[in-house]
Image (cartoon, rainbow, N blue to C red; front, side, top):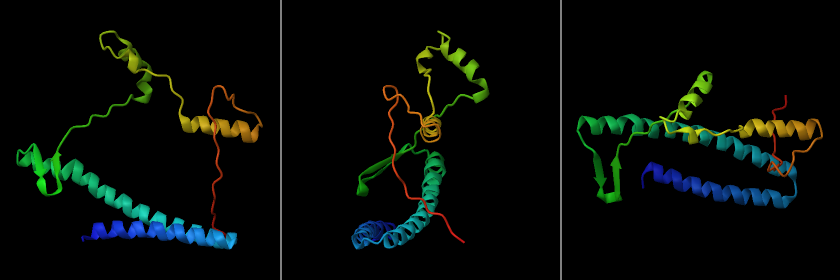
Length: 164
């Protein structure tokens, strides 16, 4: 078993053990025990997240540069890996976004019948901004959002701050 497979197995085991530890701490009825464990697990999660980000950087570099460059150099379109039943190829992804200062001009261009793209234009509201607006309305002003127009939900989250 390679190091990555071993890491995956250990991580799966850690998740199970972590859940068991939370259940045990919760059963004690002592919120201090649960809070300590929560902080320990949260800190470890953040450490793992940094490792995950580093691994993702390797994956992205390999996907975007290493494999495409090697295949181009060798004039290979696909590689078939029979032992793991996979085929590898390189495809092109095109991303496009409107330049914010040019939104009106871009919309006019998309509406031009020659482009046949008017249906791409949609009026939207950013969900994060709308949630912030709703929170301010509800918490600060004591006003509700009309429930026939908006779907609302809330949840309680634990916050942790360092004390001196």
